[in-house]
Image 1 (cartoon, rainbow, N blue to C red):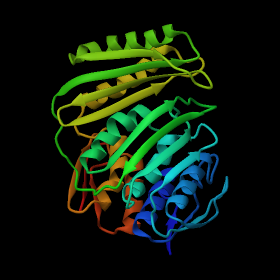
Image 2: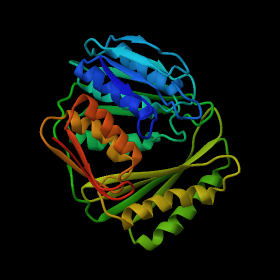
Image 3: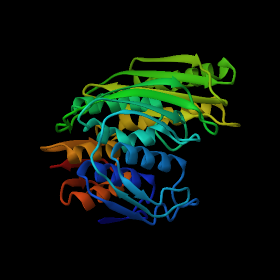
Length: 339
């Protein structure tokens, strides 16, 4: 059984998600110790439990240590099986992070699956649903992964209650080459609010349009009011360049002006377009796993090497030594290769 140090590097939940996904795909038992040991609330939290339980169901795995606060988890998978699956995070834990655990394994199942996940759809410290739908899935589709996801209900922090449904088809992954970013074509945004006046969405939009106008890239931002269990706001900006997409967002919170929400998202857009690299800083570590298990050679130029990316590479190397390489210093543009 392979043993993984869950406190290595960045020491967060990404170690757990990647290790469990690889364990299921490679049918190799794994023991993950010191899970999130250096975090303020160490051990497994609700979204980690949801991902582990979901994957255990998919892979008919024997598991030990699946409890809130557990710092050790043993996972012994059997075969990945397609099916109709329903999971509830039980909190505003991020649905997107559960998807990071189960999406690739399910795509390698022998038949199609239907999934339904309840939890947080637009919550801190995780990709919001528009990022998964408009950035990650299209790029994975280019690698051969066939999946569709639909946002049925919004879920902001702290109550969550959002709902995502989808269908994952059996897929054959092939290499990814993202080595060149063409000129910016368009920036498309969504300014959404729940339980607060529509004027807040308008202010987020207006500030963003003002900040992005000097880029001289066509920009349009829609506004909408949605239903959710508790108030929340988000500004999501999709940057469409020739050959790639990137996504940037910011969430509102009590006492945070709408203009600051817009500024945070716009600062990230501007930094990306003024820099080099193809994948935005959040995308590279999410693509590392499919790049590693796809046959052949893949390469990806990232706008910034992050601690998340380096930690994810280390986890993959425990299963697949020598498979992944990262050139570039922390916080600098880099090249990721697999093969």
